[in-house]
Amino acid sequence: MALRLHNTLARATEDFVPIAPPRVGLYCCGPTVYDYGHIGNFRTFVFADLVRRHLEFRGHAVNHVMNITDVEDKIIRRVRETGLPLREYTGRFTDAFLQDLDALGCHRPHHLPRATDHIDGMLRLIARLVERGIAYRTPDGSVYFSIEKYRGAERWPGCACRYGQLVNLNLDEQRVTERVASDEYDKDNVADFALWKARVPDDGDVFWESPWGQGRPGWHIECSAMSLALLGDGFDLHLGGEDLAFPHHEDEIAQSEGAGGLHGGLWNEHRPFVKYWLHAAHLLVEGKKMSKSLGNFHTLRDLLARGWTGREVRQLLLAAHYRDTFNFTMDGLDGARAALARIDECTGKLREAAGTTAATAPAPALVDAFGAALDDDFNISRGWAAVFDWVRDTNRAMAAGELDATRAAGELAAWERVDTVLGLGAKPQAEAPPEALALLDARAAAKKARDFARADAIRGELKAIGWAVEDTPKGPKLKKL
Ligand code: AMP
Ligand code: ZN
Image (cartoon, rainbow, N blue to C red; front, side, top):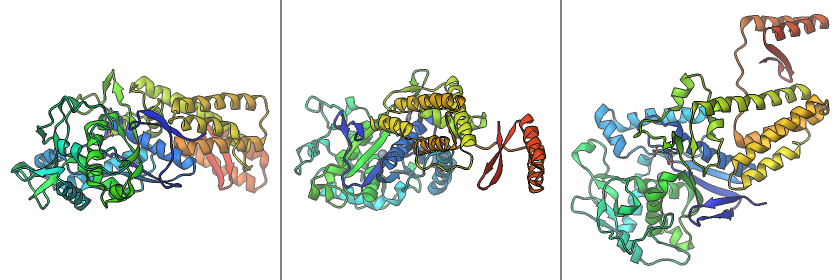
């Protein structure tokens, strides 16, 4: 069965057919680096990681791009308050963000463009929109996107070139004459939006030269310029949290399609800006969106400091289907810990049973069931059900003595294959205390002296203090029981 996904653009679930297989271009709107990300933000980024990993599992060559929004209203305010240079301020939170991604077991995106490195592309897109009469300069030197002009502009075959592709808008009944300078507005109040914001005293040193005077870009044009620059005019997949569908993504479409692409490719090749849009539902706290403004958020750092691991937080963020909102609770984290313990116990026993036997191929049942679940619009809930059915069946088979080393190795390889998508990795090794390390040395010495009875006795002593010895091709290792 082909991979199917829910495309916000089509408002339907569709077969995934890449534009130029085996390559797949994947863009996910990244963080605004004005502070530490909260785990609501990371629900979306972990989902993007899952999408990329599943596409790779299915053999696609993914080019994964995630931008870093390093110039924007909130950042400018913080820069003004702290007196730090923009790059120094945003660099600090960009590093923190990347550390958090690592701690959550996310693959680093192939490209992490910073908005401030793509100002030229933004100016090119804006100039093209002005040239086509779709954007206009205001007396203060700002440039706005005209929704009215866009709706009347010439189209190319195959291009919807319509404002309101991701959300339903009744523009005929709404007057779209007002302008909004802010990057955020709602769909009951559709208005021309800023592509370029003229420099004001509060911007301090944060400004660039442009044909319309000094200023800085609006948030929406940043993502159009970066995605088109790195993935080309017209790419496969664009992701973000559901709050971004309007106005951010709608505006990205309007600007990109209005300009015909960064290199004219949308116009010349009759392509839409993006083929598939995926939107992840919010992480909630007591029924409300986890957000900075509501103050109901946890950063990953808070949770790590309280003794949770990145792996446990990842398991929790991946617990529910991406289109279902999901309530964050501490009980949920307990559940994640318990779920991982069940998996670790099973894979630990498989490892012991397999010993040094290598698998010829992964056993198919788990890989097939899990792959089919994820092919169904990344149905991770079904994926977990496949994993826990497998844990139960494998435990039973081991208890009944049905798994010899070869079969155990095959099941273990199946888990490892599935884990290329889940990204949980092995249970982190607990630090062995000095007495356990001393016993490990003593055992090695006993084995060298061919005193196997003593070596076995030491294995027993280690077990008594909570450690198992595993003989691996790289030598003996201690594992916490
Ligand atoms: P921001 O840094 O605010 O631009 O947000 C980065 C990403 O996190 C965007 O894709 C947002 O849609 C997403 N996001 C923000 N809050 C939440 C939440 N509570 N749950 C899931 N995703 C969120
Ligand atoms: Zn974006």
